[in-house]
Image (cartoon, rainbow, N blue to C red; front, side, top):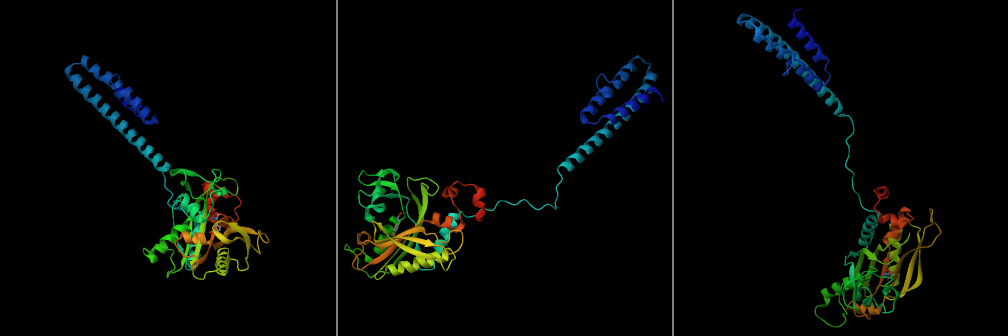
Length: 352
Ligand code: DAH
């Protein structure tokens, strides 16, 4: 093997041994670089005679081409290898099941509200919606609630800006103001401009008003924000008997329990007379035998009927206010109200 063949051979060997593109470029520099072996050989030509220069030059060029060919061959091989590794790393297993997007769902309390609306809807009740920032008039005064009532104290109610000192604005403490708001709207439609208390004729008012309510209260069974659902039925001969069957029917359907027992326990609310707390008792399951309070109710007070613009000698009815949060806890066996409002998906996703 002549000297040039040996150089080509050595270079090819070093190229093959280079295991990374960087190694390969270093090896290239040793042969083809500015102070590489081949460059030195070319420089040696200067000292030769013109004929020798020609033949030696041709030999060196041939050797150089052979080295370049070996270099390119190795470059391609290393690039192929790199691609191979990359393809393997990025390999897609098309047989794996697709990663699904999380499917959202309704909050358990929303499920309850929808259920309440559907059940009362099937009994001919409309659904009304109203403001969470209320005036003192709708939240208290119109509901026959006297100025010294404890619910009006700073400790129980969130007062907000707006309104006047005598009639401050507040976050509604219950959904009962919707009794007045809805009734006034309803009555307006039939009474025209008549200023006196309206005696009819007028279709009955049958409505529920679910929504958020607020009180300064916070523990395992009280949250500063909670839900209520108001119910109101006003007509010419609506009685406590109607309240009893409507609410009994609702509770038995809501809890899917035909033998659920209800108790109407005498109580007091400023806006009803007489008033009753409604307790329920399950006959089966972990809560069987216990009385559980689910709503306040009563015959709408004549003063409240008046504030609706109606003549209390003509119109009577009942109202109730229940706690959808409580109903949700009872239905699903949840023991801490705060779980509903923490936003923890581990809890919430159990209801989907
Ligand atoms: N608003 C009452 C409360 O928050 C609940 C209530 C009681 C509503 C009796 C009514 C009712 O409509 O008739 O405690």
